[in-house]
Length: 177
Image (cartoon, rainbow, N blue to C red; front, top):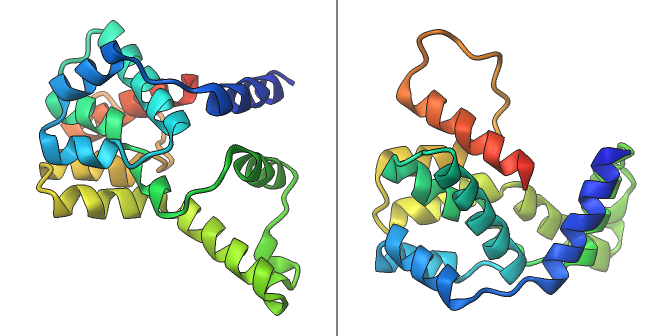
């Protein structure tokens, strides 16, 4: 039940998201100009979410530049499949009850085929965002964090490499928001 309430709140945040001057200054402080252009491609709701993830990491004392950049850019690939909040809500609800649009013959009708293709691009946003980040010259660690931000991680290991440690922190902050 708690997860459902979170999703309802998330929907509300998405349709009411506003970015202020303080937010713009923070983005400019963390990202170089080319990466800022990527950030501003995102929908305002995704920008607001990414800023919340960044602020959480900063509050936790995280300072690694690749992690902070990845916090702002981890969902940038969603701009390849712009879906309004109500369509995203349908995807989330469908996944929650196990509905996969490609399993119900949706490809028979062109309008559904187009939507299913957009859903696939939306689900591929980590890979798309990582490719865009690489194209503009983001460092390999930032690109890896963007690409892997939805990867399942096992329990923490005593001696984790830097990428895994940073990825774990990114995922923790992402889950909160």
